[in-house]
Image (cartoon, rainbow, N blue to C red; front, side, top):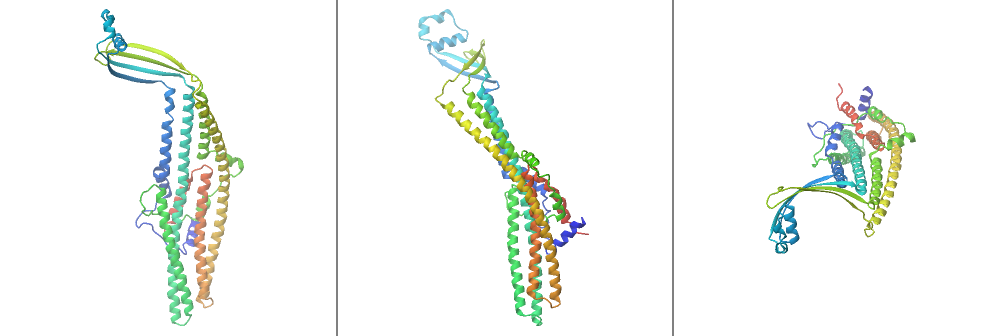
Length: 467
Protein backbone atom coordinates (compact mmCIF):
# COMPACT_ATOMS: atom_id res chain seq x y z
CA UNK A 1 0.00 0.00 0.00
CA UNK A 2 2.84 2.38 0.86
CA UNK A 3 4.51 1.63 -2.45
CA UNK A 4 1.22 2.30 -4.28
CA UNK A 5 0.87 5.65 -2.54
CA UNK A 6 4.43 6.55 -3.47
CA UNK A 7 3.85 5.73 -7.14
CA UNK A 8 0.61 7.68 -7.08
CA UNK A 9 2.28 10.71 -5.56
CA UNK A 10 4.96 10.59 -8.23
CA UNK A 11 2.41 10.31 -11.02
CA UNK A 12 0.12 13.02 -9.72
CA UNK A 13 2.94 15.52 -9.47
CA UNK A 14 1.58 16.74 -12.82
CA UNK A 15 -1.98 15.46 -12.54
CA UNK A 16 -5.20 16.74 -11.06
CA UNK A 17 -8.42 14.89 -10.41
CA UNK A 18 -10.81 14.68 -13.40
CA UNK A 19 -14.48 13.86 -13.08
CA UNK A 20 -16.59 12.42 -15.92
CA UNK A 21 -19.91 13.27 -14.34
CA UNK A 22 -20.18 15.41 -11.19
CA UNK A 23 -21.73 13.44 -8.37
CA UNK A 24 -21.73 10.14 -10.30
CA UNK A 25 -19.99 7.15 -8.74
CA UNK A 26 -17.25 5.77 -11.03
CA UNK A 27 -18.24 2.67 -12.97
CA UNK A 28 -16.31 -0.37 -11.79
CA UNK A 29 -14.79 -2.72 -14.35
CA UNK A 30 -16.69 -5.66 -12.84
CA UNK A 31 -19.98 -3.82 -13.37
CA UNK A 32 -18.98 -2.83 -16.91
CA UNK A 33 -18.23 -6.47 -17.74
CA UNK A 34 -21.54 -7.65 -16.31
CA UNK A 35 -23.39 -5.00 -18.31
CA UNK A 36 -21.58 -5.98 -21.51
CA UNK A 37 -22.32 -9.68 -20.96
CA UNK A 38 -26.04 -8.92 -20.86
CA UNK A 39 -26.40 -5.99 -23.26
CA UNK A 40 -23.46 -5.80 -25.70
CA UNK A 41 -24.72 -5.74 -29.28
CA UNK A 42 -22.25 -8.34 -30.55
CA UNK A 43 -23.06 -10.70 -27.67
CA UNK A 44 -26.80 -10.46 -28.24
CA UNK A 45 -26.44 -11.06 -31.98
CA UNK A 46 -24.18 -14.08 -31.47
CA UNK A 47 -26.49 -15.53 -28.79
CA UNK A 48 -29.52 -15.11 -31.05
CA UNK A 49 -27.70 -16.85 -33.91
CA UNK A 50 -26.74 -19.72 -31.60
CA UNK A 51 -30.35 -20.08 -30.42
CA UNK A 52 -31.56 -20.15 -34.03
CA UNK A 53 -29.04 -22.88 -34.88
CA UNK A 54 -30.10 -24.91 -31.85
CA UNK A 55 -33.70 -24.65 -32.99
CA UNK A 56 -32.79 -25.76 -36.52
CA UNK A 57 -30.90 -28.74 -35.10
CA UNK A 58 -34.25 -30.27 -34.09
CA UNK A 59 -35.66 -30.29 -37.63
CA UNK A 60 -34.09 -33.65 -38.69
CA UNK A 61 -35.76 -35.32 -35.70
CA UNK A 62 -38.88 -35.63 -37.86
CA UNK A 63 -37.21 -38.59 -39.56
CA UNK A 64 -35.99 -40.14 -36.30
CA UNK A 65 -38.64 -39.96 -33.59
CA UNK A 66 -42.31 -41.01 -33.91
CA UNK A 67 -44.91 -38.41 -34.71
CA UNK A 68 -48.65 -38.32 -34.13
CA UNK A 69 -51.43 -36.19 -35.56
CA UNK A 70 -55.20 -35.90 -35.42
CA UNK A 71 -57.22 -35.50 -38.63
CA UNK A 72 -60.76 -34.39 -39.36
CA UNK A 73 -62.60 -33.59 -42.56
CA UNK A 74 -65.86 -33.53 -44.52
CA UNK A 75 -66.63 -34.72 -48.06
CA UNK A 76 -69.81 -34.92 -50.20
CA UNK A 77 -69.56 -36.87 -53.41
CA UNK A 78 -71.50 -38.51 -56.25
CA UNK A 79 -68.45 -40.37 -57.57
CA UNK A 80 -69.57 -43.98 -57.90
CA UNK A 81 -66.50 -45.49 -56.32
CA UNK A 82 -66.27 -42.75 -53.69
CA UNK A 83 -69.97 -42.98 -52.82
CA UNK A 84 -69.95 -46.78 -52.47
CA UNK A 85 -66.65 -46.71 -50.53
CA UNK A 86 -68.00 -44.05 -48.19
CA UNK A 87 -71.14 -46.11 -47.56
CA UNK A 88 -68.98 -49.15 -46.87
CA UNK A 89 -66.73 -47.23 -44.46
CA UNK A 90 -69.83 -46.07 -42.60
CA UNK A 91 -70.94 -49.73 -42.28
CA UNK A 92 -74.20 -48.82 -44.08
CA UNK A 93 -74.11 -51.23 -47.04
CA UNK A 94 -77.38 -53.09 -47.69
CA UNK A 95 -78.58 -55.34 -50.54
CA UNK A 96 -80.16 -52.28 -52.12
CA UNK A 97 -76.73 -50.70 -52.38
CA UNK A 98 -75.85 -53.25 -55.08
CA UNK A 99 -78.59 -52.10 -57.39
CA UNK A 100 -76.82 -51.35 -60.71
CA UNK A 101 -78.72 -48.11 -61.20
CA UNK A 102 -77.76 -46.96 -57.71
CA UNK A 103 -74.14 -48.03 -58.23
CA UNK A 104 -73.92 -46.20 -61.54
CA UNK A 105 -75.82 -43.08 -60.47
CA UNK A 106 -75.46 -42.78 -56.69
CA UNK A 107 -77.19 -40.07 -54.70
CA UNK A 108 -74.84 -37.56 -53.00
CA UNK A 109 -73.19 -39.09 -49.95
CA UNK A 110 -71.86 -37.14 -46.97
CA UNK A 111 -68.96 -38.32 -44.83
CA UNK A 112 -67.39 -36.77 -41.73
CA UNK A 113 -64.02 -38.41 -41.27
CA UNK A 114 -61.88 -38.35 -38.12
CA UNK A 115 -58.60 -40.05 -37.57
CA UNK A 116 -55.54 -40.49 -35.35
CA UNK A 117 -52.29 -41.19 -37.20
CA UNK A 118 -49.01 -42.45 -35.72
CA UNK A 119 -45.89 -42.51 -37.90
CA UNK A 120 -42.88 -44.46 -36.66
CA UNK A 121 -39.53 -44.05 -38.48
CA UNK A 122 -37.70 -47.38 -38.49
CA UNK A 123 -34.59 -46.78 -40.57
CA UNK A 124 -33.71 -43.35 -42.02
CA UNK A 125 -29.94 -43.10 -42.16
CA UNK A 126 -29.93 -39.66 -43.78
CA UNK A 127 -32.17 -38.22 -41.03
CA UNK A 128 -29.98 -39.66 -38.25
CA UNK A 129 -26.70 -38.41 -39.70
CA UNK A 130 -28.35 -35.09 -40.62
CA UNK A 131 -29.40 -34.66 -36.99
CA UNK A 132 -25.85 -35.33 -35.83
CA UNK A 133 -24.54 -32.76 -38.30
CA UNK A 134 -27.10 -30.16 -37.22
CA UNK A 135 -26.37 -30.78 -33.55
CA UNK A 136 -22.62 -30.34 -34.06
CA UNK A 137 -23.26 -27.19 -36.09
CA UNK A 138 -25.42 -25.82 -33.26
CA UNK A 139 -22.68 -26.57 -30.73
CA UNK A 140 -20.18 -24.80 -32.99
CA UNK A 141 -22.48 -21.79 -33.14
CA UNK A 142 -22.69 -21.77 -29.34
CA UNK A 143 -18.89 -21.86 -29.17
CA UNK A 144 -18.76 -18.88 -31.54
CA UNK A 145 -21.14 -17.03 -29.22
CA UNK A 146 -18.90 -17.86 -26.25
CA UNK A 147 -15.86 -16.62 -28.15
CA UNK A 148 -17.70 -13.43 -29.01
CA UNK A 149 -18.38 -12.90 -25.31
CA UNK A 150 -14.70 -13.43 -24.47
CA UNK A 151 -13.68 -10.95 -27.17
CA UNK A 152 -16.21 -8.43 -25.92
CA UNK A 153 -14.90 -8.75 -22.37
CA UNK A 154 -11.35 -8.16 -23.60
CA UNK A 155 -12.47 -5.12 -25.58
CA UNK A 156 -14.36 -3.78 -22.57
CA UNK A 157 -11.21 -4.04 -20.45
CA UNK A 158 -9.24 -2.18 -23.11
CA UNK A 159 -11.89 0.48 -23.62
CA UNK A 160 -12.49 0.91 -19.87
CA UNK A 161 -8.87 1.53 -18.98
CA UNK A 162 -8.35 3.40 -22.22
CA UNK A 163 -11.03 5.79 -21.02
CA UNK A 164 -9.39 6.01 -17.60
CA UNK A 165 -6.04 6.78 -19.26
CA UNK A 166 -7.62 9.47 -21.45
CA UNK A 167 -9.29 11.01 -18.40
CA UNK A 168 -6.04 10.91 -16.44
CA UNK A 169 -4.24 12.58 -19.35
CA UNK A 170 -6.82 15.39 -19.21
CA UNK A 171 -6.13 15.82 -15.49
CA UNK A 172 -2.37 15.87 -15.99
CA UNK A 173 -2.54 18.40 -18.82
CA UNK A 174 -5.01 20.54 -16.88
CA UNK A 175 -2.48 20.89 -14.10
CA UNK A 176 0.32 21.37 -16.61
CA UNK A 177 -1.66 24.20 -18.21
CA UNK A 178 -2.16 25.79 -14.81
CA UNK A 179 1.56 25.59 -14.17
CA UNK A 180 2.32 27.04 -17.61
CA UNK A 181 -0.08 29.95 -17.13
CA UNK A 182 1.43 30.62 -13.71
CA UNK A 183 4.87 30.64 -15.32
CA UNK A 184 3.65 33.17 -17.91
CA UNK A 185 2.41 35.51 -15.20
CA UNK A 186 5.65 35.13 -13.26
CA UNK A 187 7.82 35.83 -16.29
CA UNK A 188 5.73 38.85 -17.22
CA UNK A 189 6.29 40.31 -13.74
CA UNK A 190 10.01 39.66 -14.12
CA UNK A 191 9.97 41.41 -17.50
CA UNK A 192 8.36 44.43 -15.87
CA UNK A 193 11.11 44.39 -13.25
CA UNK A 194 13.82 44.16 -15.91
CA UNK A 195 15.02 40.79 -14.66
CA UNK A 196 14.38 38.90 -17.90
CA UNK A 197 13.80 39.81 -21.53
CA UNK A 198 10.56 39.93 -23.49
CA UNK A 199 11.74 36.84 -25.40
CA UNK A 200 11.44 34.86 -22.17
CA UNK A 201 7.81 35.90 -21.83
CA UNK A 202 7.11 34.94 -25.43
CA UNK A 203 8.63 31.51 -24.89
CA UNK A 204 6.47 31.00 -21.79
CA UNK A 205 3.34 31.96 -23.75
CA UNK A 206 4.25 29.53 -26.54
CA UNK A 207 4.64 26.78 -23.95
CA UNK A 208 1.24 27.62 -22.39
CA UNK A 209 -0.41 27.58 -25.82
CA UNK A 210 1.10 24.22 -26.65
CA UNK A 211 -0.17 22.71 -23.39
CA UNK A 212 -3.63 24.17 -24.03
CA UNK A 213 -3.67 22.59 -27.49
CA UNK A 214 -2.72 19.22 -26.03
CA UNK A 215 -5.42 19.59 -23.39
CA UNK A 216 -8.11 20.29 -25.97
CA UNK A 217 -7.12 17.19 -27.90
CA UNK A 218 -7.03 15.15 -24.69
CA UNK A 219 -10.55 16.28 -23.75
CA UNK A 220 -11.79 15.25 -27.19
CA UNK A 221 -10.06 11.88 -26.87
CA UNK A 222 -11.52 11.31 -23.41
CA UNK A 223 -15.05 11.97 -24.60
CA UNK A 224 -14.56 9.67 -27.59
CA UNK A 225 -13.17 6.93 -25.32
CA UNK A 226 -16.19 7.18 -23.03
CA UNK A 227 -18.58 6.96 -25.98
CA UNK A 228 -16.71 3.94 -27.35
CA UNK A 229 -17.01 2.23 -23.97
CA UNK A 230 -20.74 3.01 -23.82
CA UNK A 231 -21.14 1.49 -27.30
CA UNK A 232 -19.33 -1.67 -26.22
CA UNK A 233 -21.60 -1.93 -23.19
CA UNK A 234 -24.65 -1.92 -25.44
CA UNK A 235 -25.88 1.53 -24.48
CA UNK A 236 -27.82 3.45 -27.10
CA UNK A 237 -27.01 6.96 -25.90
CA UNK A 238 -23.82 8.99 -26.03
CA UNK A 239 -23.88 10.10 -22.40
CA UNK A 240 -20.42 10.17 -20.75
CA UNK A 241 -19.50 7.24 -18.55
CA UNK A 242 -18.19 8.08 -15.08
CA UNK A 243 -14.78 6.45 -14.73
CA UNK A 244 -12.09 6.36 -12.04
CA UNK A 245 -9.66 9.25 -11.91
CA UNK A 246 -6.44 7.30 -12.47
CA UNK A 247 -5.07 3.95 -13.53
CA UNK A 248 -4.07 1.37 -10.91
CA UNK A 249 -0.56 1.73 -9.54
CA UNK A 250 2.51 0.00 -10.92
CA UNK A 251 2.55 -2.53 -8.10
CA UNK A 252 -1.01 -3.73 -8.77
CA UNK A 253 -0.42 -3.87 -12.52
CA UNK A 254 2.78 -5.88 -12.17
CA UNK A 255 1.13 -8.30 -9.75
CA UNK A 256 -1.65 -9.01 -12.23
CA UNK A 257 0.80 -9.62 -15.05
CA UNK A 258 2.29 -12.78 -13.54
CA UNK A 259 2.46 -15.11 -16.52
CA UNK A 260 1.81 -18.87 -16.56
CA UNK A 261 4.36 -21.21 -18.09
CA UNK A 262 5.03 -20.30 -21.70
CA UNK A 263 6.57 -23.58 -22.86
CA UNK A 264 5.18 -25.02 -26.07
CA UNK A 265 3.34 -27.90 -24.39
CA UNK A 266 1.38 -25.72 -21.97
CA UNK A 267 0.63 -23.18 -24.69
CA UNK A 268 -0.73 -25.86 -27.00
CA UNK A 269 -2.92 -27.24 -24.21
CA UNK A 270 -4.17 -23.77 -23.31
CA UNK A 271 -5.09 -22.77 -26.85
CA UNK A 272 -7.16 -25.93 -27.30
CA UNK A 273 -9.52 -24.50 -24.67
CA UNK A 274 -10.20 -21.40 -26.75
CA UNK A 275 -13.79 -21.16 -27.89
CA UNK A 276 -12.84 -20.29 -31.48
CA UNK A 277 -10.71 -23.44 -31.69
CA UNK A 278 -13.57 -25.42 -30.16
CA UNK A 279 -15.94 -23.89 -32.73
CA UNK A 280 -13.62 -24.92 -35.57
CA UNK A 281 -13.36 -28.44 -34.16
CA UNK A 282 -17.15 -28.77 -33.87
CA UNK A 283 -17.56 -27.29 -37.34
CA UNK A 284 -15.27 -29.98 -38.76
CA UNK A 285 -17.29 -32.62 -36.92
CA UNK A 286 -20.51 -31.21 -38.36
CA UNK A 287 -19.03 -31.25 -41.87
CA UNK A 288 -18.03 -34.91 -41.51
CA UNK A 289 -21.53 -35.80 -40.29
CA UNK A 290 -23.05 -33.90 -43.21
CA UNK A 291 -20.83 -35.89 -45.56
CA UNK A 292 -22.21 -39.09 -44.00
CA UNK A 293 -25.75 -37.73 -44.44
CA UNK A 294 -25.19 -37.25 -48.14
CA UNK A 295 -23.97 -40.83 -48.49
CA UNK A 296 -26.91 -42.13 -46.45
CA UNK A 297 -29.39 -40.75 -48.99
CA UNK A 298 -28.44 -43.74 -51.17
CA UNK A 299 -29.60 -46.21 -48.50
CA UNK A 300 -33.12 -47.65 -48.23
CA UNK A 301 -35.63 -46.04 -45.89
CA UNK A 302 -38.08 -47.96 -43.75
CA UNK A 303 -41.02 -46.32 -41.96
CA UNK A 304 -44.05 -47.67 -40.09
CA UNK A 305 -47.46 -46.16 -39.57
CA UNK A 306 -50.74 -46.82 -37.75
CA UNK A 307 -54.16 -45.25 -38.32
CA UNK A 308 -57.40 -45.23 -36.37
CA UNK A 309 -60.33 -43.81 -38.39
CA UNK A 310 -63.98 -42.94 -37.85
CA UNK A 311 -66.51 -42.33 -40.64
CA UNK A 312 -69.98 -40.94 -40.06
CA UNK A 313 -72.60 -39.15 -42.20
CA UNK A 314 -72.88 -36.20 -39.82
CA UNK A 315 -70.74 -36.45 -36.65
CA UNK A 316 -66.98 -36.18 -36.15
CA UNK A 317 -65.35 -39.19 -34.49
CA UNK A 318 -68.58 -41.16 -34.60
CA UNK A 319 -69.54 -44.47 -36.09
CA UNK A 320 -67.65 -47.72 -35.80
CA UNK A 321 -63.85 -47.19 -35.98
CA UNK A 322 -61.34 -49.08 -38.08
CA UNK A 323 -57.62 -49.36 -37.86
CA UNK A 324 -54.72 -49.80 -40.26
CA UNK A 325 -51.05 -50.61 -39.62
CA UNK A 326 -48.25 -51.02 -42.08
CA UNK A 327 -44.58 -50.74 -42.96
CA UNK A 328 -43.29 -48.94 -46.03
CA UNK A 329 -39.81 -49.40 -47.48
CA UNK A 330 -38.42 -47.15 -50.22
CA UNK A 331 -35.12 -46.98 -52.02
CA UNK A 332 -34.20 -44.13 -54.33
CA UNK A 333 -31.81 -45.67 -56.82
CA UNK A 334 -31.13 -42.58 -58.91
CA UNK A 335 -32.38 -39.03 -58.56
CA UNK A 336 -30.95 -37.42 -61.65
CA UNK A 337 -27.45 -37.14 -60.19
CA UNK A 338 -28.41 -34.80 -57.33
CA UNK A 339 -27.20 -37.35 -54.76
CA UNK A 340 -23.77 -37.50 -56.39
CA UNK A 341 -23.53 -33.71 -56.48
CA UNK A 342 -24.53 -33.54 -52.81
CA UNK A 343 -21.86 -36.10 -51.87
CA UNK A 344 -19.16 -34.25 -53.78
CA UNK A 345 -20.12 -30.93 -52.21
CA UNK A 346 -20.20 -32.25 -48.65
CA UNK A 347 -16.84 -33.98 -49.16
CA UNK A 348 -15.28 -30.70 -50.28
CA UNK A 349 -16.82 -28.85 -47.33
CA UNK A 350 -15.48 -31.49 -44.95
CA UNK A 351 -11.96 -31.02 -46.31
CA UNK A 352 -12.32 -27.25 -45.96
CA UNK A 353 -13.55 -27.61 -42.38
CA UNK A 354 -10.59 -29.84 -41.48
CA UNK A 355 -8.20 -27.27 -42.89
CA UNK A 356 -10.03 -24.57 -40.95
CA UNK A 357 -9.66 -26.54 -37.73
CA UNK A 358 -5.91 -26.96 -38.27
CA UNK A 359 -5.57 -23.27 -39.12
CA UNK A 360 -7.47 -22.26 -35.98
CA UNK A 361 -5.15 -24.32 -33.80
CA UNK A 362 -2.01 -22.96 -35.44
CA UNK A 363 -3.28 -19.39 -35.32
CA UNK A 364 -4.25 -19.71 -31.65
CA UNK A 365 -0.82 -21.08 -30.74
CA UNK A 366 0.96 -18.26 -32.59
CA UNK A 367 -1.31 -15.63 -31.06
CA UNK A 368 -0.83 -16.99 -27.53
CA UNK A 369 2.96 -17.01 -27.89
CA UNK A 370 2.99 -13.46 -29.25
CA UNK A 371 0.64 -12.29 -26.48
CA UNK A 372 2.93 -13.73 -23.80
CA UNK A 373 5.91 -11.91 -25.28
CA UNK A 374 3.85 -8.72 -25.48
CA UNK A 375 3.22 -8.83 -21.73
CA UNK A 376 6.94 -9.23 -21.04
CA UNK A 377 7.74 -6.36 -23.36
CA UNK A 378 5.08 -4.14 -21.78
CA UNK A 379 6.48 -4.82 -18.30
CA UNK A 380 9.99 -3.90 -19.44
CA UNK A 381 8.69 -0.69 -21.00
CA UNK A 382 6.84 0.11 -17.78
CA UNK A 383 10.10 -0.17 -15.83
CA UNK A 384 11.84 2.16 -18.26
CA UNK A 385 8.92 4.62 -18.27
CA UNK A 386 8.80 4.71 -14.46
CA UNK A 387 12.55 5.39 -14.32
CA UNK A 388 12.26 8.09 -17.00
CA UNK A 389 9.39 9.75 -15.10
CA UNK A 390 11.42 9.81 -11.87
CA UNK A 391 14.49 11.20 -13.62
CA UNK A 392 12.52 13.83 -15.55
CA UNK A 393 10.79 14.95 -12.41
CA UNK A 394 14.10 15.28 -10.55
CA UNK A 395 15.68 17.08 -13.50
CA UNK A 396 12.80 19.55 -13.52
CA UNK A 397 13.23 20.17 -9.81
CA UNK A 398 16.95 20.90 -10.25
CA UNK A 399 16.41 23.21 -13.23
CA UNK A 400 13.68 25.01 -11.32
CA UNK A 401 16.11 25.67 -8.45
CA UNK A 402 18.76 26.88 -10.86
CA UNK A 403 16.25 29.15 -12.59
CA UNK A 404 15.17 30.63 -9.27
CA UNK A 405 18.84 31.41 -8.58
CA UNK A 406 19.37 32.97 -11.98
CA UNK A 407 21.61 30.13 -13.18
CA UNK A 408 19.24 28.72 -15.85
CA UNK A 409 17.33 30.31 -18.69
CA UNK A 410 13.57 30.23 -19.18
CA UNK A 411 14.14 27.98 -22.20
CA UNK A 412 15.86 25.41 -19.99
CA UNK A 413 13.05 25.56 -17.46
CA UNK A 414 10.34 25.15 -20.12
CA UNK A 415 12.23 22.28 -21.70
CA UNK A 416 12.45 20.55 -18.32
CA UNK A 417 8.73 21.07 -17.68
CA UNK A 418 7.87 19.68 -21.12
CA UNK A 419 10.10 16.67 -20.58
CA UNK A 420 8.65 15.97 -17.13
CA UNK A 421 5.07 16.23 -18.33
CA UNK A 422 5.78 14.02 -21.35
CA UNK A 423 7.52 11.43 -19.17
CA UNK A 424 4.56 11.35 -16.76
CA UNK A 425 2.18 10.85 -19.67
CA UNK A 426 4.38 8.11 -21.09
CA UNK A 427 4.48 6.42 -17.69
CA UNK A 428 0.69 6.33 -17.55
CA UNK A 429 0.53 5.05 -21.13
CA UNK A 430 3.04 2.30 -20.30
CA UNK A 431 0.90 1.24 -17.36
CA UNK A 432 -2.13 1.01 -19.64
CA UNK A 433 -0.07 -0.98 -22.16
CA UNK A 434 0.57 -3.64 -19.50
CA UNK A 435 -3.14 -3.86 -18.68
CA UNK A 436 -3.97 -4.13 -22.37
CA UNK A 437 -1.31 -6.79 -22.95
CA UNK A 438 -2.53 -8.87 -20.00
CA UNK A 439 -6.13 -8.71 -21.25
CA UNK A 440 -5.06 -9.80 -24.73
CA UNK A 441 -2.88 -12.56 -23.31
CA UNK A 442 -5.75 -13.99 -21.28
CA UNK A 443 -7.95 -13.95 -24.36
CA UNK A 444 -5.22 -15.60 -26.44
CA UNK A 445 -4.85 -18.54 -24.05
CA UNK A 446 -8.60 -19.04 -23.68
CA UNK A 447 -8.80 -17.51 -20.19
CA UNK A 448 -11.30 -14.91 -19.02
CA UNK A 449 -10.14 -11.29 -19.50
CA UNK A 450 -12.71 -10.39 -16.85
CA UNK A 451 -10.17 -11.51 -14.24
CA UNK A 452 -8.75 -7.99 -14.56
CA UNK A 453 -11.73 -6.83 -12.53
CA UNK A 454 -9.40 -7.58 -9.59
CA UNK A 455 -7.88 -4.18 -10.40
CA UNK A 456 -11.07 -2.53 -9.12
CA UNK A 457 -9.65 -2.74 -5.60
CA UNK A 458 -6.43 -1.07 -6.73
CA UNK A 459 -8.39 1.66 -8.53
CA UNK A 460 -10.43 2.27 -5.37
CA UNK A 461 -7.19 2.65 -3.46
CA UNK A 462 -5.86 5.09 -6.05
CA UNK A 463 -9.01 7.18 -5.88
CA UNK A 464 -9.20 7.26 -2.08
CA UNK A 465 -7.62 10.43 -0.63
CA UNK A 466 -4.72 9.76 1.68
CA UNK A 467 -5.36 10.49 5.32
